[in-house]
Image (cartoon, rainbow, N blue to C red; front, side):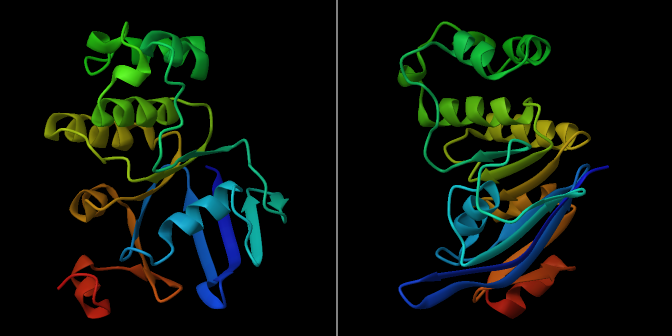
Length: 216
């Protein structure tokens, strides 16, 4: 089992403290749900973990390796809200470009993907692009995944399939997930964290979310 630990994260925008000494950990074999109102700092935190956004302070450790400066860590994959796919190539070549030969064969044969293999990425719907992006991360070699709005635009059928694959693939990965579909996040998560006024709180009972004004 591998463990990602993030500690002492602070981030200030225009004099406003967005993150206040945040601590978060995630181990392979678990899904950590990250909840919070819009603008609470969830996406900011994920970008800081991945290394594409500088923090005022950050301490990141994966097992015994410490990363003191903000930089992209190869053992972490990040799903941003905006698409990262190359629009001009088809789905089949996209999968082969991003994944190992073994994992490519698995994804190429998935029922969600087979009808799309000859389509250019730029011709896919928002939900189809999102499905492909999530699959590329789930079947990557990285041990830790940061999923920001993975269910955005997905059909109910695709959402159900992706949810099941997240549960299956967590055997090999640690996954931190945030999404407006908070019910799905709660059902998928082994642990739930709530971003509240710059602080990150562990929620042991989903019913307690109302206490912090997240559910009304």
